[in-house]
Length: 297
Image (cartoon, rainbow, N blue to C red):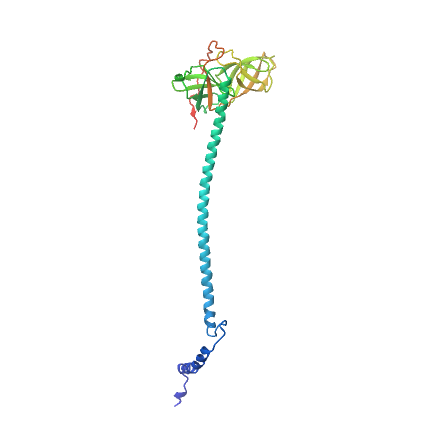
């Protein structure tokens, strides 16, 4: 009998909905201010807004990241292109500088060739001896086919390089004045004191057989005497770098630095007709070029 009063949640919920429907209907028909959020929209917005904001922030973040990534790719590509262009420009500048230096050398040689009355033949150095500190030799791209003979003098506009030691049809070997077997008749330009130039090493020579009383000072210019019938007179050999006299003796020791850097010379002149040809000098029979010559790269 008391079962009728037992609480049934489902029945209670149905009753509440039946009673609330008229009120909901009336509120839906009420004209609210268009700018105001309707009361039934507020719960929905309260739930949806955080999700929508999170999605919007995420979308914007992805868009920014994608844009930055694409910009980074473009920057890397542009950077690579700029590096390639810079390398090309550097190579072009290097080539132009090399051409300028070569033109300067050739211009000086041309002017030198016009100023000198001797018949000379221009040649290019193709190899330099780099393996010995005592022997100094070079190889040039001219030989007997061009009229070159053994013992002919080899010079540049800066001074003496050496003389032809061996020659073939296509090339010749030059014994540099710094080679210990190279001998050249020489004088001190300032005082005319005479001696014999003899090589000491790759970048040094000495003037032998000077009298103790001969006036020689640091900085004096040593030139060819022209008395050996090999070199024309007055071509620079080098600058005196050391003068020493022993307590006893009739001679003095004089060393000089060659005017021409043998390791850097690229073009030379071979003197075909000396001005005052005398008896051809004959260096020591043991004179030999260094066993090998390393070609320039």
